Length: 94
Image (cartoon, rainbow, N blue to C red; front, side, top):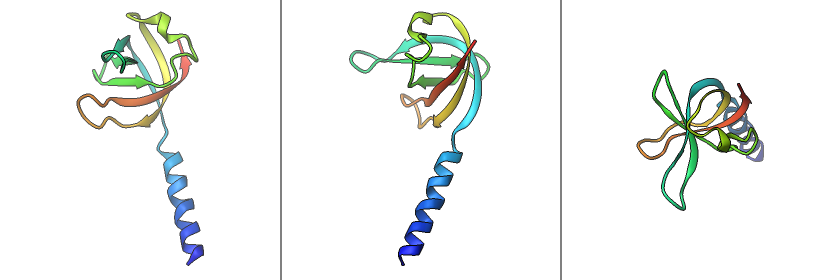
């Protein structure tokens, strides 16, 4: 029985890591939400989908607000619905 539990946890762990898709986005960076629930986001100019950035400090993206930029990012979590945008981690900045 323990073997099956360990095997199942390994399979689910491997599929969880495989979900991190690398994507390239170009669009405008803006602060979204209301105090105290604000976050930095980018709206892709092609798909008009909003992505919440979880690591804006890594590339000093706070200073790039209201500018058009190109980002390379990993998709952490897909969008759930209105008010819950997709979550990304930026790995490259142009």
